[in-house]
Picture 1: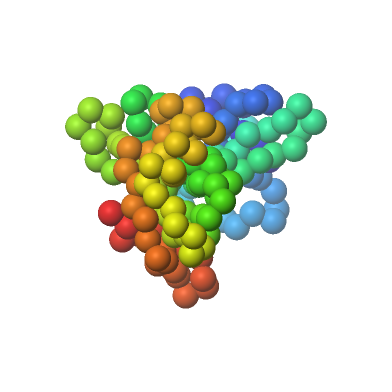
Picture 2 (picture 1 turned 90 degrees about the horizontal axis):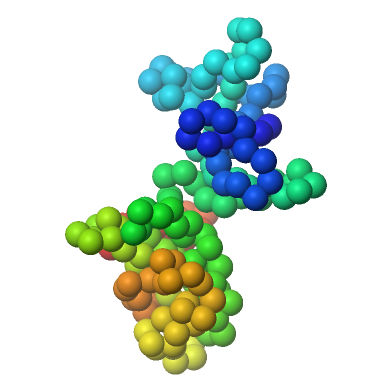
Length: 168
């Protein structure tokens, strides 16, 4: 495995890029979907080799340990910068009283995408102002949500994970 930037260059420690995987254990493609296979599986550095571009963004530390950042298609492009919803969600979860959190990008004529946070509390009284103040204290300015929606509960998939599709 290794991490590449958008130009196909391998990245070193501290940089965020797409995880690329190779080996006999990697599937060869998507059944009945040659277009998805073509996009995800590309020629590798060795003759005849095909490698899998995972669509997952990772970073690596100085010791070579890999850290998941976000799905590539989850990244929010706000103010010309890439924002990981996971980073914003982690900050939200560190606020006392937050039980569930989900962050999405919504169209914005100035920012490109604005950050919108959905927060479900644990029964204590959370306010939008408290959530925003916490975010301002723990996140870079460009990561602070423009919108905060307080909910009783967030929608879930059948496996119990928070379902972001449909959040607006």
